[in-house]
Image 1 (tube, rainbow, N blue to C red):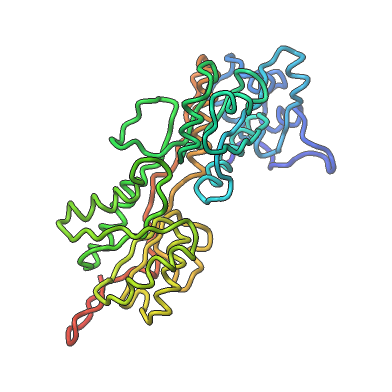
Image 2: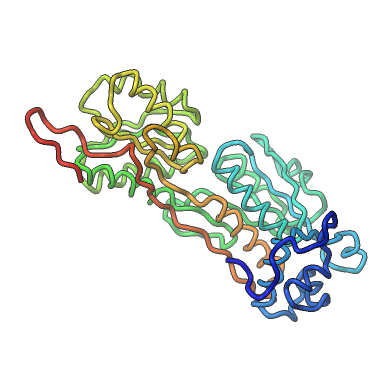
Length: 357
């Protein structure tokens, strides 16, 4: 939602970066008010703070951090710790964190974790002592970093959903992909499939992946057969290899995949096996990657708001750094099943008219 009552974004003279004066003029406030917002002062109403932050983002204003530090303002840098910058979920979460942090005038450093890092290794990744940190802790290296960070470091994290669905740490946020996997499985059962097979992503931690648990939850609750999960990887090739022998069994009519890349490989294997999608095989993915809507057939999948979660992690960190400001926490979208062309009813028995639901 744009800010009302001001001139359009990027309203600065050609060739010149936006200044604090441009922000003040477009937001309709004084330069002193913009300075208070940038420096985290409390003498600003929440509505004014939100308006100024919106204009800062729209104009692409970058505060002069050296001048702020010399003036006694708070240092404005944050380090993001992650073990992966390529996989879709981690990359999208990182994008949301960066977007929110830079809009607030923070510089962002990214440090890629290695397996087995100890507390000294983790501490050395910070630009300065007690620098605020955000951790993408969807896997063992991320979880280890959370445990090994010095206790005086302000930190927030995007984590895997806790097994019991409740959070013991108020500075951690997650997406409920367990509930989302259960919903996707119920969708396939509601179409008339007797059971749903599953191609699993690798376990990112020592625990059973939450998506696998959600698939199991739905089948058990419906009293349906529970096949062994097929071990996949992260790539289309691993999905392709996982299901080639399975697809010879014509009683297999529905497959849920742990991510969209696996689903892409499953669809290729199905085509080679002479299986029609969705005529006699339904395929559902996970994550709603940008390509999923443009496959043929387009892929039914679960959309997860990783970017929104990343923005919320920074908002939570800002609340931790400025408790007196009573900042509101950005929200993110709940997981959503996006129904497209790759899912449908199972094939009818010979001689029985097919019924679409």
